Image (cartoon, rainbow, N blue to C red):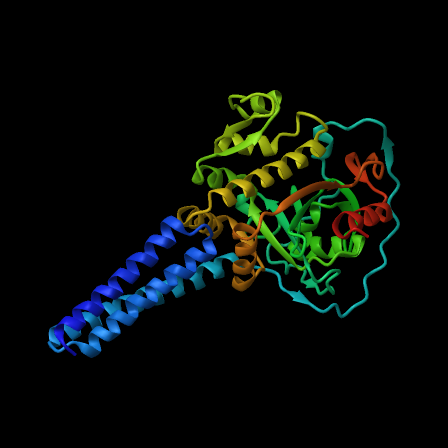
Length: 399
């Protein structure tokens, strides 16, 4: 091939790479398109180097092109093994699903409770119902397989734990938030489960709902929710909820509407009624842990949902390669899940890069279906299980 044609081909490929890179970084309006264009640019570079090896005459030039191909191959292998290690971290100690080979045990009758008319003090909610502590090497309960209630709805349970118990799986889950994503309607419904809800737990009699995680890991709490409310949860994400401040700081803080009292409690400068107040990571953590303003833990779970809604909206609006890397870095240290890489990729692109998603929120137990009570000196929330089951299905599935 003539020298002029070789130069022309090289210039053409170079301009193709520049054009693809420019469009990917500065023009593309979606992360999906950005990734496709960057992949195309990488393919053009590799094709150009291979052509260089084939068409070049001087041996030193062939070796140079070959060396560059080797560098790209090594970088690709590094990326592959880094991704494998990242998923290994996310799935460390994860609980898988299995067919149930025994019938569900018959729950013992609910113990006699002392019903009270007013909300107990925070100290009473901190009193333990019993002193059972699982052995350090106890095997987490597997998640029992359930047929999907609706094929187009994906239910994922978010469990918030203390950071130092993220790996053991035996901390209490003070945050239990169901994310129900309807792929057809393009909606997300958030449903908080109150931590002090008094329920029968298979193998452990009656106790607060948040102790399920301590007794048997994510599997026990998912099985309990599925059995009591006829749900089909199969996947979970466990977060070091106290470390959300790390994520918030990595994205430059978060903007959220607050009341004057909430802003004061968080230590933030209130932006005014109807305006969004900017929170740092530490301030955001104080906001989501606040149960002194409003209706105690009912108001705190509402703040969890408001925070998650604001966080999702901000990440979606500001999504970039940098913010994506920040999410990956945060997840590596503070997130554990049984979702696969393909699940995460598919859902991530749909939720962060697809059409606009509307979000609704609710909490369980629903109004009029619960009471305040004490058992063994500990405060609990006994509920009407059947009524809440019906309301959950109406909320999630429109039944």
